[in-house]
Length: 166
Image (tube, rainbow, N blue to C red; front, top):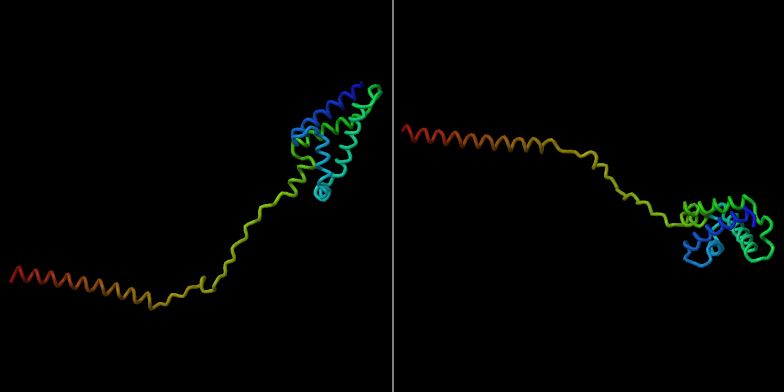
């Protein structure tokens, strides 16, 4: 087996393992592919959806050919770009930027913004007219009360003064 084939197989195994964990399944990359095929609206939300799906299928085919067919160990079955793509895709899964994660984010229910409560304003709420006579009347009443209290006090003092000296 060549060095590039070894690197490819290791990269594919890492990707397959993380996919198995994601889907709690025996077939990791196949489960990822199946999930992408199940979601028919994926391309509408994720621009590179079809490209990633096609690429995963091609790389899975290379892996299966290398693992199951006789005579594939002698030559290169893949390119360095294939290995790089697998490693990059693994990173996307780890960073939740892969197509399925992008799809989930794009289709997640958005919290509804709170609608401002409709408040109707009455023009008189801003310009309240307070009649002058009410304020004058209150001042007159309080002034009258003070006058009466003073008058009572004077009467009491005069009465006491009269009672003591007369």
